[in-house]
Image (cartoon, rainbow, N blue to C red):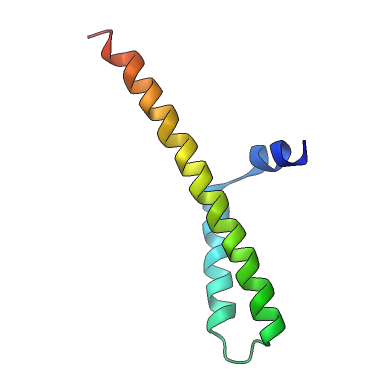
Length: 72
């Protein structure tokens, strides 16, 4: 159930901003290995969430295109 709530609150735009911030942390040579690993793990999670969201949008667009193609 928490996954559904998380999906509802998901914003691809906000996630992309977070990924940019994570990239800056990873590029900083002063970032410790432990912090780098934690940031990397969070980045991977965000990228996967973005990919999943884009896949859902693509599926919805295909369905909508199919519905509209019969009306022409």
